[in-house]
Image 1 (cartoon, each protein chain N blue to C red):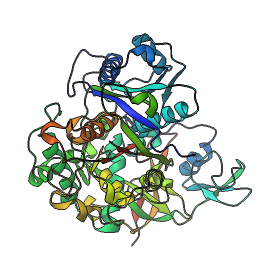
Image 2: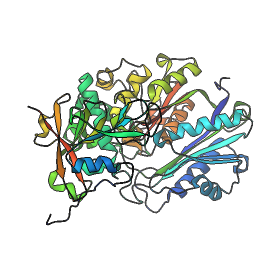
Image 3: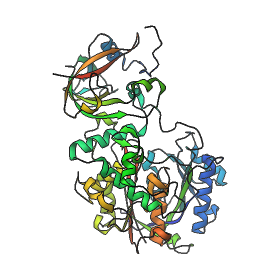
Image 4: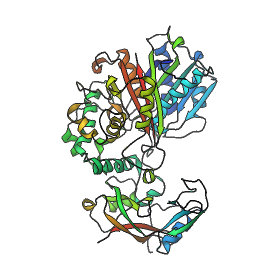
Length: 376
Length: 136
């Protein structure tokens, strides 16, 4: 049984991004869900599943149930999933499965958080016993991965910088992006080290905001507000193990989840018109491009040089500015951007007539990965 | 010890007590699965055969640098005077890798594959941290 082309994203929305004081994670989540439902032209009463990624700023049990209450919905399925940054694609996949099984018809997948204005220190906690040695925060973990990539393949900090610079060039065309100032390789190199080899400008933003999508069957999608965006392929893979015991630090779950998604969709990297690849740190989309097969393993550094992924490049990537420049929130906004590109709603940053978009999500320190392929 | 040790210390529990006791005694211990012989580092069950039964055996204390970082950001006040400092993943000769740090080395001289051996840093009465230094 293939799920190819049986489900569609019919509503997609983002809230304001950046530093937005006075708005709770719950309020962002509800705002995003409301906007996505309005985008679809669906009343909230037609939603029978509420699927959420919990906000890392403050974990609360029964989070999706709180969101459902705030939305005034008593759904058939309410679930909070923890796959970190891979969760939001996971939510879409679980929605597809529940729709296919006949359990529900329409799901809202929503996420919001306020890590910038809300509780401090969310992303800099010690990682277990490693804190005894001074290893804290996500940048330290991804710096271990970047160092290993440099060791094995000769990747350079400047090559990582090209990811940041290309992404910022896209963000400068997005009025809602958190960071829009132009960036050069020199700016990247001059930015302070957080955890060497990663500079500050290798690291994603910390941003307040929310985003949501509405998923339904292609039959239900036919008579809604906007043309459906069809889900061609989807997959997950979880490296799962913590950094030290992982067999390799330089191949991610993108390899297998990408194979699953591409096989389901019946397309390959050469067919992709626009990529929205999870970029919590610059090294991540580089490894993801390798694992998806856009280039050979180890050649990601050379691949991203000279604007390949920036405006006018051969592989437009992270066209709204990604986590590095649009919003540091955990990936739902990348799905929304893919939908907008396929609908032609990209404004100044619109890619020419894209037909197929590739989206990735990745969580933890490369612990989890999810891939989704969309078409118009 | 005249001043209180301010850095975070590992929490000792029934599963890891023998490891930390070994460090106190100057012995780096790993878990050897009683069923299949697989060597592991601080894991409740054997990831190969899933049996919990194991014995603690002394490792050689030797390994090589697998990856490392140099932390520049102050995440924790207690590490402030160490900045910038290394955190290193060492692959033990017996197989398991562990997060640790290298001593007696300049940050710019750290290289992957460098042979290292364990040294013990007694930081509190209860906790002695295994760290590594370059061999030769």
